[in-house]
Image (cartoon, rainbow, N blue to C red; front, top):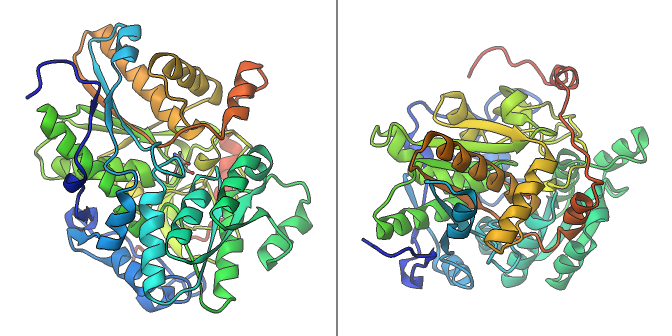
Length: 459
Ligand SMILES: Cc1ncc(COP(=O)(O)O)c(C=O)c1O
């Protein structure tokens, strides 16, 4: 037990978890299986072999509770892990809240976010099976940076389809990726059928993650020794991110505390699932029935708060398997908000199922209020956070204010998924009052949902 106020809890390198946690082992009912996009029948591991290595496919379907982290992956993790758990004492003082606010700071990794937790693992398992090149998409640029970094570590080539609006907004992200040896393309491109189709319909599209995923999947499927890597959504990505929550459990043990509320931003769900699932296990087991777990998303892309829980494609062109998840429809092209990493039409099937079953809740914000919170955070805690992470900051501040109102000494934990040093143009837009708020209208969501294939029977 610690009596004085500590600013941060740092684990020793040898306390870094040796296994990832797989929440599939603790679900009350199994996940609905992914379906073949043509036959609509459940797919097996063999169907994924064209674009993923067997090592990751096995993780995708595994029901083992813990999965060993290979030593070579741990060796790269050690560059920045374990990451610090901070107590936001200065923010608490400013808010005059009786609540304690903690945040797990993932901005210390070389690419600047939680994304390399999975990128390094994915590059390793691909390298092990003789793959020479990985192809991917990137929204905010964080995932592309992480995969570029990871590929460089394992001597793999890397090609990144970067969503056009991010490519234009964030030239330094592109340079960062190139610095690690990656090739970066503004998506949609003319290199793929899916890109050409989109450009035919709308030459000026700002792009979307769904479109870039189609391009990357097509590229990987049509080239030898080339695989695809996804930065979120899939079970194996969520699995790799649980290193965040597993470290947190040790850090809270050192504090002798346990969070009452955990919140985090959700794009495809990887950082927040990784942060919350090791705690959520205690809720599933009935040990922490009152624990609140809250996903935060933009009102411009309100997947969990306004979408539907049903089967949909992971990409725009309908090339990927159908996943049972919250979705706004795979043709959804969100407004070009600054939190590029939160502009995805779907969500992790695991996070979606646990939300549907009431273990998790969700809320959504406008981007101006999110940046107001991020600015307050920078002026109290010092760190300039990514626009995505700023959604979690906003929720934590609101929750702490609620605690003040109700005079409650709750313990609030939020996932601080990355730094915002390549997002300063977004901060500039906020300061110069050029930032627009969007709330995605229900009627457009309804139209988008009409494009989803109807799968009648639950398989
Ligand atoms: C810093 C940061 N946080 C969060 C996200 C959202 O992704 P996910 O929900 O998979 O964590 C992104 C995505 O690019 C990101 O860059």
